[in-house]
Amino acid sequence: MEKQVVDKVIDEIIDNQSEEDLGNKDNTYLGEDGLKYCNKCGEPTQQYRPKVFSPDKFIAYRACKCV
Image (cartoon, rainbow, N blue to C red; front, side):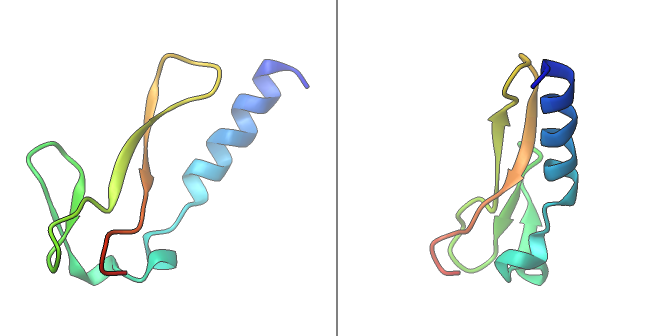
């Protein structure tokens, strides 16, 4: 697969990720670093991840301890 096609597919997956899938959409606050954090346990519900074929990073949702 060409690099451009892979990048496009990855970007679509990233754009379609949902905070609701983790069940903590209404229980978060925005931290000083620009990421969302859980109100209950204080763990981040987002993280910076590197793109596969690019030096750029993107924000991905992740589950905290209490989810």
